[in-house]
Image (cartoon, rainbow, N blue to C red; front, side, top):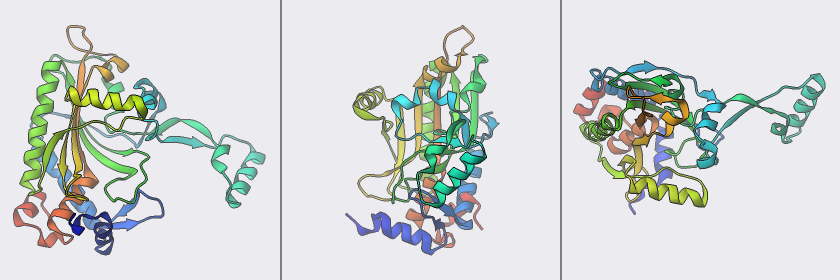
Length: 304
């Protein structure tokens, strides 16, 4: 394998050029000004591309009601990825014991209790409860840019525990939702090709947990419910997924009571760009100095 595709030299290059700032926890890093500029400019490019789609724009915090995670049975399929928020509920004596335990390097997390919120594992999750009821005949289209969390600590820079997803969520009949998902798959490929990224698409599956998860993944692939667009960032062989296109059928609509005009359970689909991964794909493909990027790419991203 070409050494240029090993993750360590790429990570070191990102750090050396001030694009990312290392932290003490795997799967987390700070973003430098230029890295953030690329992320924001790409988001602006997506806005221009989808300007005529008429999507409703929502913004949500990085936490959601834990009942959302329970309603969609997330803990049955992805318990290894979830992040629960815990806090202190005790009295003065218990607070003293908590601080003493932490100061001595003990397991002070055992002294906290679960709160009403969890870290959002997917940008689309907080949207579905807002769509409860009957959608218009033309369905609904929502877009968000949200922080998400997945417990996947790794030295590989593209595998983050906390990152941003720019997503579009389509709700309606299967005849409305599936062609929309397929349209965005081609649109996403065309967008990345316009940025001169060597992108390709493939059928994919989610990282379901356990033995039953393998069967779910096979079923998902057989039904072609999930596609990903891939770019070589870390490996020439195992390319990195930088965006995904998912058809959920009636899974979320059933959980939150979303109906079409004829009273049937609606279907949903979403597509999402991994913003940090898009930026890293651009740096890997075009180099760490944005001033040396191809002029057409700089113009599309309105880079200084």
